Length: 100
Image (cartoon, rainbow, N blue to C red; front, side, top):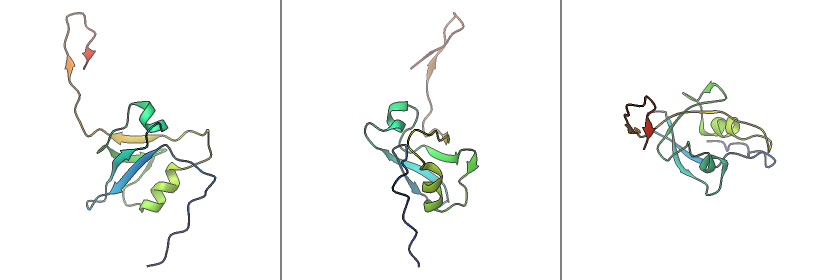
């Protein structure tokens, strides 16, 4: 197979490593320490990437997903994720749940 074109060196990502699974889904494999993704506190290993900037990643190549995530420094990218874990909340009579 032919080689993929190199990624634009002037573009940057958000610090998410991911893998293409046999079922065609993209799953976060790790976060770069200190990266925007890690600092957000919203992205975790094994979370599934569903879309990038509203574009579904279903059926896309790894190279295309990398291209969608990367961009000029200081710009925003929106990752739509499916959490890999459930979160427990404690019910309270005050009507405002406290998250654990």
